[in-house]
Amino acid sequence: MDKGRDGAPIEIANLRKAFGQQTVLRGLNLRVNRGETVAVLGRSGSGKSVLLKLIIRLQMTDSGSIRVAGEEITSAQVPQLNDIRKKVGFLFQKAALYDSLNVEENVAFPLRRHTRMSDAERKERVGELLASVGMDRDLRKMPSELSGGMQKRVGLARALALDPGILLFDEPTAGLDPITAEEIGRLILELKQKRKMSAIVVTHDVHAAKLFSDRLLLLHEGTILAEGTFDELQASHDRFVAQFLGHGSRGD
Amino acid sequence: MTLLPLLILAAASEPLAGSLRDQVTIAKTALGRMFEWFGEFGTFCARLVRAGLIPPYELGELIKQCDAIGSKSLPLVVLAGAATGVVFSLQTHDSLTRFGAKSFLPAVIVFSIIRESGPVITGLMVSGRVGAGIGAELGSMKVTEQIDAMEASAVDPYKFLVATRVVACILMLPLLTLAADFSGILMGWAANALAEPISLRLFFESGFKSVTFSDFIPPSLKTAVFGLIIGTVACFAGMRTRGGTEGVGRSAISAVVLSSLFVILADVVLVRLILTIWG
Image 1 (cartoon, chains in turn yellow, brown):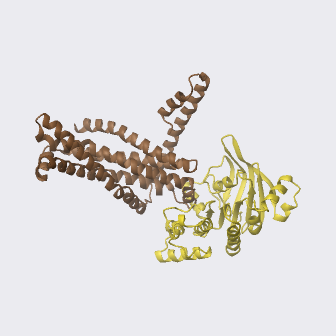
Image 2 (spheres, each protein chain N blue to C red):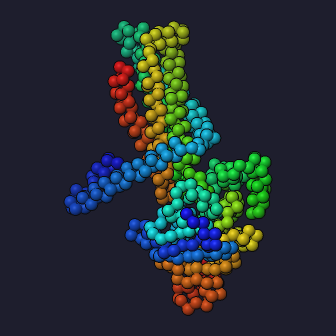
């Protein structure tokens, strides 16, 4: 497996995925450059979340290539696959915190599994991670005691635990009130500036996407309909793009 | 949960007036689902075996599961065993008195509990409590993407969640059976002693006088197979959950129903096997 040192963190070519009769992605091509944040916009059911799951092989592709950190993930063997996954942080739509573990244990989970840190070191690292998302006062709380926004913050701290170079966000602001959504958006922007990570953010929140992304993609009927900065997309004459940005920017 | 009975049910649920073609289509769909179920179950078992055999092993999680499955089922199993012992004592006391064979009472209670009732009662109680628990827990983890999150952080959920639960069930069932046997015999004596005073020592002596290795060990160890069945079926039901909270409910039901059914069916085979080998 070639490492592709100069390759892009994420490179997707001709990706196809269907569920039964329903084709979700039809030959998608996407490249995320180092340090770049790309927002993938699209209507519900347009295959945005599926795209993220394919990138770390939580689902299998039908055909096409996905290179993550220079390595082909679609054909990787389990040990290689796990090595790639350790380089990627994933924030799930509903945070997906482990119900049976408290906040501290949730964030410590990847560290406990993949590092040889002592208890004290791990505790310190968890403290730092939670402080970076403003959650360092609720270490002992269980996920069910947290609000949606707080769960997202803890989920983000857990995604950052192994210091990944690539981050994938699945609807980071969905289901949150506008103020909390703005806070999470700013947090992502702050992390991006501080850690210089490459990221794909799947969202239908145009306002948040505008805030933290370098480039926006509009996914429609399984392919990329439009691509560019927010201003470039806004200048588009395509009816769907104009309609999407128009509705989206009003906080849809 | 698309097994043969479902196939028949699906075909029978259509009105008789429905055309033959419809019936054939329904039968085909049900048959397809049945094969899909077996296919998925086969893949699940293959992943489970691989995860269970290849190191590293999740010993910490295994101990936690042994506690959750073993220690926390203990009161229930002891109570069920005790109730069985009392019922046996009451029923047999009356019957044996009628035939003038009252002196056999301790032996009848001991034999029936250690050879059959203890293991089966334990198997069924655990498939109810633990089967539903595992089915619902893994099911809700599945629908809330916690299992995906685990995979995304490069941890194999088959190793961490499934193998540990299955192995804990295999290890804990024989121990729980011992507890059920003991409480059953003890309460059998107590119930008997109320009607007709007999010392515990005498009861034990006369009950265990003719008990041999083959009466006790194989039936107790067969519950390890029950444990394998309960753990595997419940984890499978949980891991293939689809469709939100409704799906979690379906998984819990499916875990309990299938694991209890398979425990009873396995018992038939195992009893025959034990009788063949140990007489």
